[in-house]
Length: 216
Length: 216
DNA sequence: CAATATACTGTTCAAATGAACAGTATGAGT
DNA sequence: ACTCATACTGTTCATTTGAACAGTATATTG
Image (tube, rainbow over all chains, first blue to last red; front, side):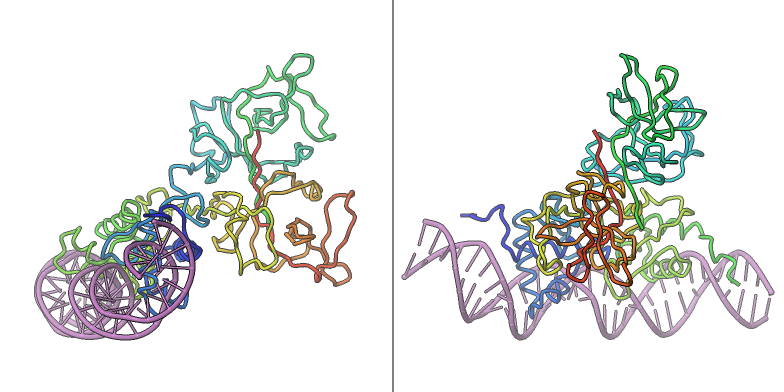
């Protein structure tokens, strides 16, 4: 009977996309008349019918008799859909991370927050995730620029080639983790900084899992 | 005169908190009657008056004559402010964007979604925002690597130096937008690709506003 | 004291809005 | 041929809802 129980027609996709988009752009879902107006329907029943079909198929929810209560149900096929809140973590941006990391994360050091989607970045949400604003060009060889935000995970085991944050001269600095003759070392990715530092002397604060760059 | 121009009375704080909370819990702001009912007001004018005061003081916004359009304005001074409503949008990732961009966004071309926090990236959520997975190393001079996700805004006016996506050989490609003797041109940021293409022959599909890189 | 902001009651109006009813037309499936 | 989902037009109804008007009472301030 329900040959289309899962699939959506092109028109239904359009309507669903408009509703989800409207919700994002206008910060409120559209009324049925607004849906009709957007598509040029001269009857709001047309919009109501589509909404009804989308509800039946599970793509929309609403509260009966309540204005602007349409809600797109989470589904990977809908762009502009508000991501479910569980997936989003607010990652604190530290200017510099003092030695005793996990024990004593002081709010004074937090310079702001970055919200990231853990699915997008492929990280598991954890309180050990943090961000660092990149200073200097010591990692330019890995195409990490000044002003970039590095998302790091504390407590991960670094593998050779990973970018890590280490506390050097009381500043958190990004380096590449390498093994030199079996010994773990840190090196900068810029010929200007040829130093190779034995890692065991340092505290590795986190392994970079993602990078975010704002442009313009 | 306006001795309270910034501060809120206890009652106003309560009302504001209820509205912000209702927005979170019920996924929609309350109507004036719901506000009145919650506080036991026998008249909705009481609720309307409070909302009016909160609007005047800049803590609330609304769209006149629109149902459930109350919005708490982000403000650090509000003790309540649950999760400060970071605005996350799912941006579609296009493998390649065919010529008629805005007209025909086909779902078939969407390869997935990236969730970004618009506040973090400093972009406004718009249906014209999209993401592109970077292919090749033609923009390595700008430290954009293969596999990076470029977040682009369609319809922006590119300024010289901006990274833009253009449709070349039926593929969306990133280039730097420059002006050569007054003429807009596109150039790759890699000595291997010395081409300089006059921009007027091409469709510029978007201006890069942010970059996301997954590591590991 | 007068003016003003707060904090309400009680009522009314009109616009915004969801929902329903009665149709028309098309195409797919049985 | 018959049913059913889709995709609409056109209309009407009832509710929801924002907004306004007319009051009352208290506290604050110049």
